[in-house]
Length: 401
Image 1 (cartoon, rainbow, N blue to C red):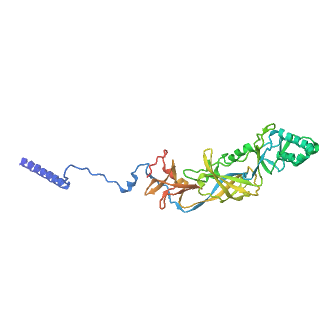
Image 2 (cartoon, rainbow, N blue to C red):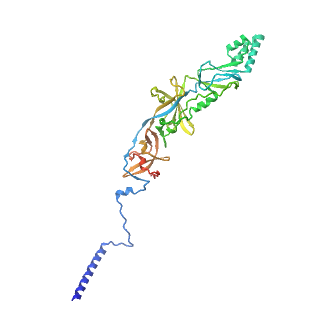
Image 3 (cartoon, rainbow, N blue to C red):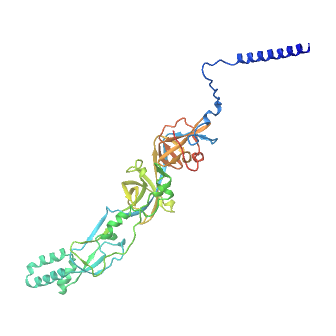
C-alpha cells in the first residue's frame, strides 16, 4: 500500500511537468528556417547625438540669426601730404661746363623765382664773349647777332651789357630759378615719385576695421611715405653737358594728399567720391576733398589702392601725416558677428543649429567691417552658434557638410 502511494505521487508530478512544458512551447512563435536574434531598439531622443564628433557638436551655446540688408561702414586710411607732380618745371644747363658754385644743398629746399641756383664756367661761353668784344670794335653791324648768341647760351641782357661796358669777360655764368616752389635733384625725382607709394609703415588700426575675403587686409596695407630732404648728389667741380636737366621744381601753389586703401575696397571707392581727412592728432583741423585719381599699386609684395586728393589752398604742409575716412556701402547679403564665423584655411564655416546639435556648414563671405562679416550664402532662417571657436577642438578638425 505504501508503494502504491509513492507511485501515484510520482505520476502526478510527471503530469504537472508535462503540462507546463506544453504551455511554454505554445507561447513561443514558430520560425521557418534558422533562428534570428532580435535587434535592440534606440531611443529617438538620442538619435541625433549618435554622429561623428567632428561632424556635429552637442552644446548649449546660444544661437543667433543673421541680419540682412545694406550696410554703410566708414573706411579709414593713412596718408601724407606730398607735391603735385603735374605742377612742376625743370632747370637745365644751356651750356656745357664745370660747376663753380652750387647754392642748393638738399632736396626739397624752398626757392624763389629768380633766385641764384648755381654758377657754371664754360669755355664756349668765354669764347663767345671774346667774339662779342671783337665784333663790337671791328664789325659793329654784326653786334646784334653776337649779342643774341650770348643770350641763347644763358647770359642775361644786363650781363651782356656789362661785358660790353667793362670789356671784361665773365667766366661764371649764373643759373636762376624759373619758379617758386621746392627744388628736387633730377636724379632723385623719379625715386621720390615712386617712394610716395612705397611701404614706409603699417596701416595699423585705421585700416584694420575694413577688409574682405579671408582676412582683414588693413594690417598689411602700407601708408604712403613722406618726402625726405636728402642731400643732393651734385657737387661743385662736377661737369655738366649742354641741355642736361639738373633740377626739378615742384610749385608750392598746389599739393596732393595721398591715401592707401586695401585692394578689397576697389569695388566700393570711386573717382570723385568725397572723403574727410585731418592731420594726425589734430582732429579739429578736418578738411574735405574729392578723390581725383585711383591707382592700383603693388609694392613690397603688398597689393593696395592709392588714391589722390588734389588740394588747392590749404594750411597743410608737405610731409604731414593724415588720417582719412570715407563711407563705403555694402549692398545685400547677411551679416554675422566675426566670432560667429570660423576660418579654416581659405574656407569660412558657421555652425548651424539642428535640433540639439550644431552642424558645421561652409559659407561664402564678403566684406569684413567693424566686427561684422558679410555672408553671401543665403542663411535666412538659420540659427547659428554665436561663438564658433567654442565648438572647435584644439586641432581644428571639422567635417563640413
